[in-house]
Image (cartoon, rainbow, N blue to C red; front, side, top):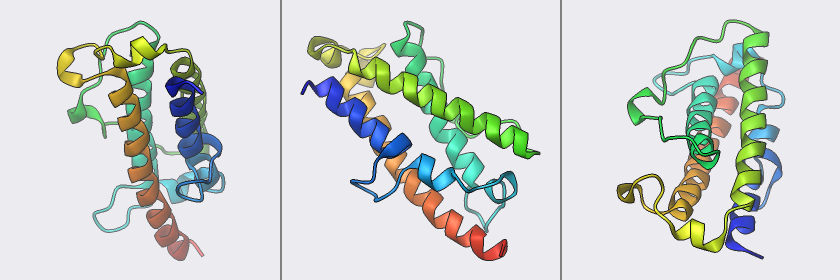
Length: 158
């Protein structure tokens, strides 16, 4: 199997359908979270909605590059999102997240071995492979946070 296919499958595992590393994924964890739980603040932790939107921000930014666009995302804006004030808002966030994640995985699968080694928009960012693997690792990091915050918010909303 090509490296690009392996990375696409690993990305799908953490976001859409896998259980191998964390025994869960974003889609499974967020399936039963409503907008109230998603926006519930626990101490100084980020909310489930903020973490979800943050991960999606980076997926969408890299997706833009994979689709031929520029790298327009900036770390300083990675937690700046409109407030979620209804179930409809939350469902739109999730819908875009799943849709962009599917596109992301599909485009990663299409990358050649030589493209994976090329610089990602600028040499300072490393290769395409490094950025895709970083996205996977970043997603697992925040998935763990979502799992913990979800458990804490479930206690509140019982």
